[in-house]
Image (tube, rainbow, N blue to C red; front, side):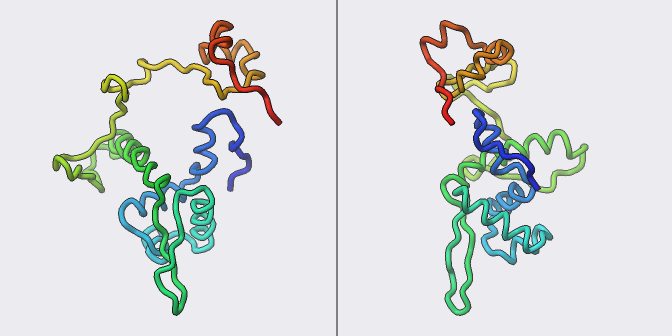
Length: 180
């Protein structure tokens, strides 16, 4: 179980890890992307303990990635369907699969291939700039403090340098004030 919350960190990656940093949660989403919707389907497919599945589904519901929908009234039964937020996680899952195919398959045949229905080709994730359309690599990027980054952290010279934040930027785009 998680021992520390990252929900209030000034980093959306940390906040995402706070919600989805558990392996079961990511695997439940994977199965939902592959079409599973019912509790017992998740139990069988993942060999996940029922209490663990209940806890993870409740967390995914709480964070708005999945919604619980009744499909039967006698007895009451529910399905779990992806919300818009949950469906928006799909590119992240494809990126994880692409990385895993390259670095964990060890030259073995791939267990799952995603086919792009539009063109019929095998799908691999690539990050592209939404402005110029070019593929983006780590060396092509520079992190900068955004307007929501706490000023008290930017006052630390090491953090300011890591985020390439200067005093001139502070006047152009002031960081968020510290709030309790």
